[in-house]
Length: 435
Picture 1 (tube, one colour):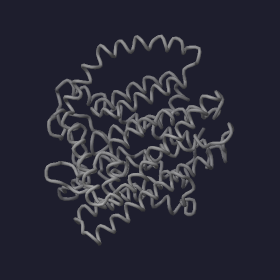
Picture 2 (cartoon, one colour):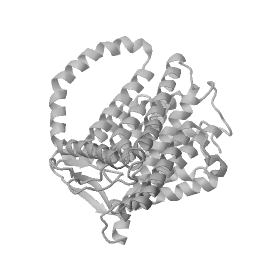
Picture 3 (cartoon, rainbow, N blue to C red):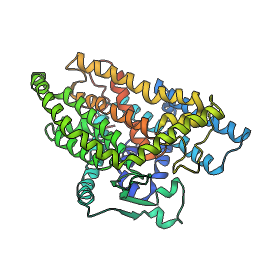
Picture 4 (tube, rainbow, N blue to C red):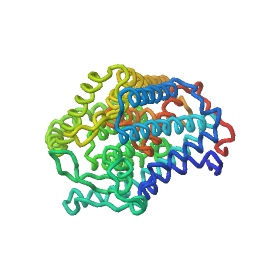
């Protein structure tokens, strides 16, 4: 099915060009421009129409009100205020991409093919980069590799979020205390975000891969897991592995379930022999990361409860003995610090409760009817498979820091909620993809 270029296609081109924005350093602002285009394109369709949209706008509202209140009543550091405003703008970028994708699917469900194919190309680029780089890293032939971006060449060095876009790192050392292990870091400004982007992109792409290249899909998943593993991001690897298992159970013919169940003891036995040593080594490599995270989480809770348990501090403050602002590396703790218990509750609803409920709803529909979703069934299965990766990222990373990552994650959420809420088995077609 061919998709003609139209005014609706342009934002997808922005997503497809994430590798270029990464090399140029334009990811900081290009998705804001794309979101403004979406607002002008869709106009009234940008108004909230479902619980997820309302919850996201609720998070933005609470965090903005907290920021304003603390800025007026208490006074906050200007740099932290700018960072908080950036977080709010990135959340709105996500809202626009979610609304845009939902709009496309409501017009013609075969846009799912176009979206999935776009992310398939993005994943292909990440895998092509990852394989040779991983060999060089783990063979000890390379420790660090990065190039200045166009933004880095044009602007003086900056010690802030914008400064992260001044260099495109392919391989970088673990910067947390207690570890000095080189990690793969492509398409994003840090390894955790890179792993999240590759993981969720893989599951969006999986619908296209499964429907077009059924047996090649398993090689694709293996390479994607390898790429994620090379970032040494444990939560992302675990989430993606669970997602692949979900897809395997969904697409394997039920007559082979007995064989699949018979393999489980063999896999479990092998895991008991090899996994403890592997996990021990990985944990040793990332011990500093774990320590820094949990110190930051504890400091986040303590500071929010001390200053304002209801609406928080408005910003993520820095402390002298931590390399990261408190409230970093977790969507829940980030919103707890900036928006107190109220902000964290609304964020937990938006990024954990709603996705989980929609995932369960989608799973039940897939189980009850083998014909559900017709020819687009692989795209619904892929959306279900991506849920563990989405939840893992929100648990251990901020959803509203990097605009390119947020755009892709909200694109995923649009697909998950569309398939979960879709009524009937006949696809909604308006123009068969030629819109």
